[in-house]
Image 1 (cartoon, rainbow, N blue to C red):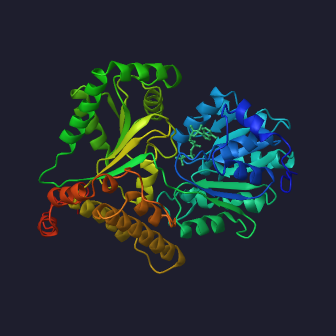
Image 2 (cartoon, rainbow, N blue to C red):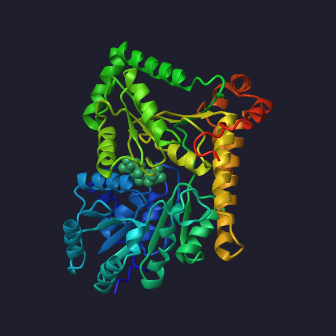
Image 3 (tube, rainbow, N blue to C red):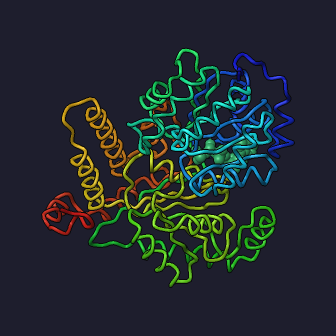
Length: 492
Ligand SMILES: Nc1ncnc2c1ncn2[C@@H]1O[C@H](COP(=O)(O)OP(=O)(O)OP(=O)(O)O)[C@@H](O)[C@H]1O
């Protein structure tokens, strides 16, 4: 039987950090989290995007005997992590909808052989529901090879969360079927109530689970809200002018270009472009905006769920490698959760996201090398009403009959509406540091105002002026709501 709890770490985790992962030192909290995991505790980690949460289960997987099962919600995220680990020669496998049957059989054969080579297996939560995978899990467990279960992006467990995935709820299977196997849950985006909900749903004991809540503040991200309206929509011209200024500056500053070229040997950046993501609401906007940018000579590519799995993998690969034509990804939220690319210099939200957590998570793709990066959010009151309308429509469609399922659904919808309202408030406020607004949403106390890393702290008065000039008045917006085409796609 697998029995990892109570085990004391004896291996030199610093050595493994350097030798296997090529990192010189731990970041704050990583050592404590990894030690708790190696001691066999259940662990809950909430920490900022880009904190380095993956290392907290990957490193123990390289020290402990046996296999670590990693639950991951997105194909793109699995591929991203698996590629990074293979590059470090770590024996890792992934089983997802793209895995060929023959490959899957080979992986299962290794997992069940009694002395597996594979140290980590990335799977979707849906796979854990299948009989065939549960049989494999049972065999691994009986052979004493089930070391740990890592639940990445654990907020997907909570019905109140922004990315709820029904299959995640069934992950309580691990605790009920294999009570001795430690579980580690990791997320960047849980409010205190969602944290409690995750722990309860997965069947962890809150009194014994080692919980680590690190700051969600990212000082190198410069958060800005850009105010606009339907009438004076200047998003495209603003973006184009900004990108062209950067490109021209680089072209005219050979020393900067040289500096970037020198870095290029390590992370393959190109001196003639910058890497970024633009989030839009609909697939059609991905295609339209990326093609408008391409027409202007900007290397932009569309990424959305309408592409084939192969097209998506290729698009992501080219973006990660900074291939020409793939500097900027114009994506729906089908892209991004957990994706780790070091040199993303900006994330733009073309319209208002549906939730605060979604905004924070997507903006968190920027600046993962620790250098400054811009997080720009276009906000208009018309968009606010349209997104709010879509959220309300979801809630009307989900209206229930008072049973427990529909009561849960009501809680879920209320939580989503609250999250969206908090984001609206964040955009409308111009009188405080954006980092404080984000900290407040996630229940983090004592966040210090930033040092010129948000629009308020850079230009307090100018920001108010931009808001007054940029937004349509509430009176005007209310007259627009009367128009039948105001809500756009899907209006009924
Ligand atoms: N101790 C360390 N020293 C240097 N780099 C590190 C260290 N730990 C992690 N990293 C790097 O930090 C980057 C971000 O790590 P990771 O992808 O695990 O972040 P995360 O916390 O899961 O973020 P997100 O919630 O956004 O997915 C990775 O490139 C990883 O290699």
